[in-house]
Length: 472
Image (cartoon, helix red, strand yellow):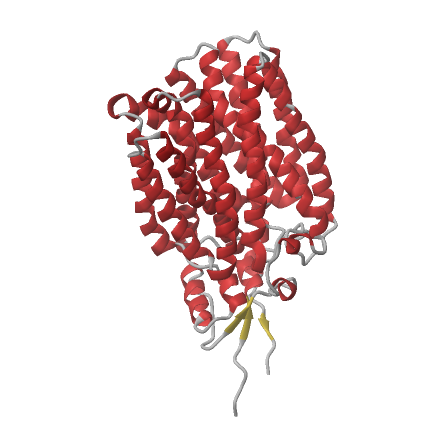
């Protein structure tokens, strides 16, 4: 007598999992590649002074290099997000890391401004794909009670990578020139491909959703590696256990991001992400140069920027635990405190030590808020469109990322100076507070089984069991 093969839902399996060695390695490698993504992208702001001197560039030309890189990441996130929901997270992440590693290394050998411009744009295409795809993968392997924290850990890698640019530049550039930091970043990125290949699996939820030949066997192997001791019967078929997937698998269009409850969430998420990106990229691009204008040496300015980024990573991780427990609305405390710091910096007449302290605090709260927002960017979308959801949010945010450095330059050039720039940009976190209140309320109205809904109960994982679907 022929029997139907057993079927297992992946959602309860994910909810009951513990942090095994393979699971931690996966998150560690995701953190590594976002670290390299952050280093390779933000190293330009630390090398800008030397590049400007070597190529005899104007401030506008240097600023354009930053903008074209951001434009590349905006386009790249959309392309890579689409591919990730079609062919998988893992191969698209591999392609992204190979691409930005190779083109960042090529940037070191550019001999004209046109080459710098073209290589910065192309490397941006690949750099833009890493963050939203690692967010999607981290979200799909994390229990709901840990999801924002899991994404925040990968985002902290990006922040720390940007922070490393200052000390590494201070170490390498005086002896080996600005090109050495791009060679180092590119080479390390290409080496990281090996770690991705061996330790980053495909999303099992994506595999179950696509249901291609051999997918069930691949899922079983992955689950046994990530969760040793998990009982899986031979021939088991896997489902996502997500009630939203049936509609999502009809095919992605941008309208998919506005269906049902997402109609109220996506616009709020995009707006708050855009404002946060404008603020953080103003801080990333201009703070080292503003520090120099305040009388700090180039190395001291880079050290302050690096310390501020480390403080920002701490802020990201701290707020993520509250987001997991209390929802998106709790992020508002970060921009609220950022407003106070930005306005204090705008008052001016601060002693150097006090100024440096407020810059570090401002960056901690700005980065903390930004990390909180990125930690939820993909969590509201079902697996079938999660990479696209995160990628579209990331790409919309790049509009703010391009506006921030440009507007900062305009404010500095018009005579408002650093004080005026800090005061004007304090508007961004102030508006973010209002938007996050609205987003928190929208999240609380989501059905309990919807993606991104608050976890109202936190059962003991040791007592949870994988819930097989009854079969005949």
